[in-house]
Image (cartoon, rainbow, N blue to C red; front, side, top):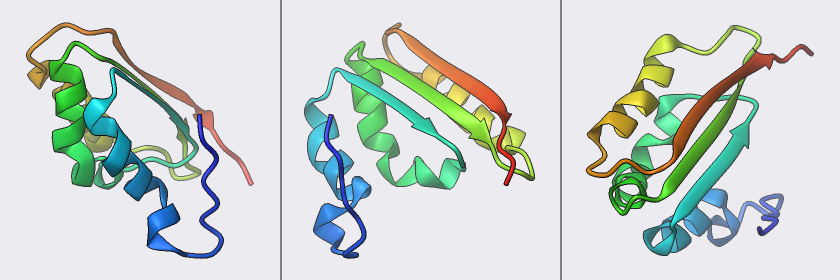
Amino acid sequence: MRYLDTGGRDPEHSLYRWLETNLPEATSFACQTGYFSGDGIFPLEAVFMEVLDRGGDFHLVVGGNEGGVRSDDLTYVLDLFDRAATAGNRSLTLGPPTMS
């Protein structure tokens, strides 16, 4: 696990850059997020598919936005799971909505 401080807005310290660098060799991906959109996964879709195709684990816990989570975005993740060449351990969990 690594903490990324994106407060300085340096692109080299972004979560995206870290994932882009480390996911190609990963055997497991686990993430919990309070806000979710398929647009956040799309740029790394090929790398996520590599993890899944290797039989890697993929676990995503999604918290509900105040407006809810779009079913299209959740379906996008499930479609990734279905397209994987192997049957690794994977899960998508939808948590309760967050309130401000």
